[in-house]
Image (cartoon, rainbow, N blue to C red):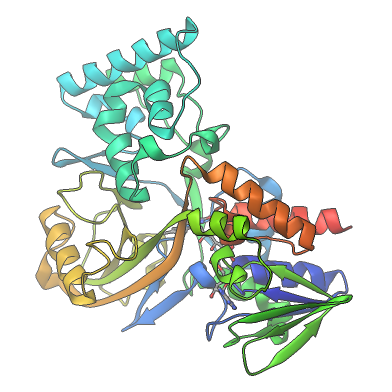
Length: 436
Ligand SMILES: Cc1cc2nc3c(=O)[nH]c(=O)nc-3n(C[C@H](O)[C@H](O)[C@H](O)COP(=O)(O)OP(=O)(O)OC[C@H]3O[C@@H](n4cnc5c(N)ncnc54)[C@H](O)[C@@H]3O)c2cc1C
């Protein structure tokens, strides 16, 4: 069985490794000069920046975590999360609901009061199931925490109004915080939330791309880079895949590339499927790396919900994950800005974005402009899946079509799901198990 894997991001290389371990003949077709997709890292003047935005390793899935830890071996260091939220001019602990005593007395009271009101309404059965993401936030955390942090932050990161987003993807992902924790948080007794991420890991050298190289090591020869799939022809018992110059034959294809790219390679896509793919929402991310002379704060990363404070929604400090990501005596900062093609942010030049980031982050006290020794910026078109209110209808049409056509969809923008690296590896393991 000869399998052609379309796309060489984390998903494509993991599929290649696992299928080849099972004795299959695989070839990965990747458009870029290097594999890795969103998990690529770039060296700039001695600094290593993750160009798809900051990536850390964590999971609730112990099998997947073991797989990642095993492939990285000694090239992995554990860190204890020290994450902050920039709120009303100060850095408060993350998650926000675990830091209520760090707020002003009025804000703390308001968050606590509204949380308890929401909890009582829910216990009395006074709440209908949430119709959208914003309602889910209000019902789960109460209006205080929602207005102060969750609604502005989510509006910024998704670049889409939470009241126009679906709530379905929250089920099982984020539970209501225990009331005991909220009360402890309000009176100043230390609690920790989102605990499966409280200790995370990161490669010692090479940035997150080191994970791709470690996974790809046994199948390096099977990855064909610089091959942008443009045509897929379905033939009896197989496929012809071409980049317009070269053509490869396979008995099976597995797509890990965005659905939007896949449909343009195929003929005879029904109108309803075309429309459903066109209606899917996603956003793009600019990752702005800044090399700093001297120190940065000891934070892992910090969220900036306030739209006026900076265009960036999250700032990470890669040199706090691994010292090797910055030259001796230096440290590093990685800012992320979400945007959509055609919007005001997307029309800013790279220089405009970089100078905005340097001035806004300097105002937030993270460094001073004279400390900046290098910068670099990358625009990632497909970054986050946005679950709008029509998502389930559209994705159902699309998945039924590709299922009936016998083309498996695995990967973040192929399944069109908000999957982190662990979710991608889980999808690969599930796919391979189903084959067996
Ligand atoms: C800002 C940001 C931060 C993140 N942080 C974390 C984190 O901290 N921890 C975590 O676990 N996860 C994180 N993630 C998620 C993680 O990046 C993804 O889960 C993972 O990289 C998805 O891998 P993939 O292979 O499915 O997709 P991709 O990485 O998108 O790979 C798809 C590949 O297909 C290629 N391709 C596309 N079209 C074609 C074509 N026509 N022909 C050939 N090749 C093609 C692309 O070049 C790409 O290499 C983050 C994501 C973002 C956007």
